Amino acid sequence: MALDKSIYDRWHNSEILLLGGSAGSFKLLFHLVQTLPSNLNKTVLIVMHRKRNFLSEVEKLFAENASMLLREISDKDKINRNTIYIVPANYHTLIEKDYSFALDVSEALWYSKPSIDVTFESASEVYNDRCTAVLFSGANQDGAQGLLKLRNAGSLTIAQSPEDAIMPEMPQAAIDLNAVDYVLTAKEIYELLKK
Image (spheres, rainbow, N blue to C red):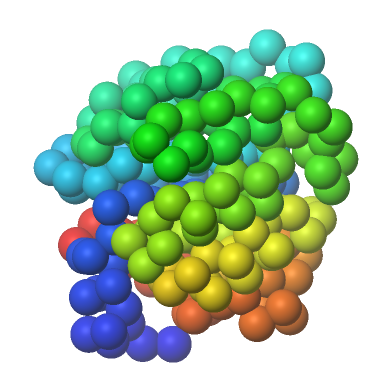
């Protein structure tokens, strides 16, 4: 699918970029962290499935290679632009109406904590049409319902093309739910987000 004027206009009008992924998405998200322009003037939020209670070097690796400030979220952090936030392992992350983050310890969804759905659904209630959300490769359906709520709220919703994904189940679930405005390859997603 070609990138048209409409998708660029909606991307430029967004205040926040939500990136969700699981198995097969690490390299894609790492590449995005490296290539997003430092003057993006948007908030970037990464929700990535990680093994439970597994101490990860993800934040350090991403921070050392990011073009803008990158940090892991703490409870009640205020949301700032030109910052990449990574959702911490073992918590669900919600976006509050006062533009802060709330960490939640309730049960895992789709065997995942953090859950992409939880974050995306909360974002839909705060940002409405001022949001762009991308769902990458993954092995379960997490993110599909959240992406649908975002789309219904007017957000720009994108799924990585299942043919282009290492694990196609996650983007395919969103496509099957009619939660997606655009189905794009990773290359097309990079092209869109860097402009």
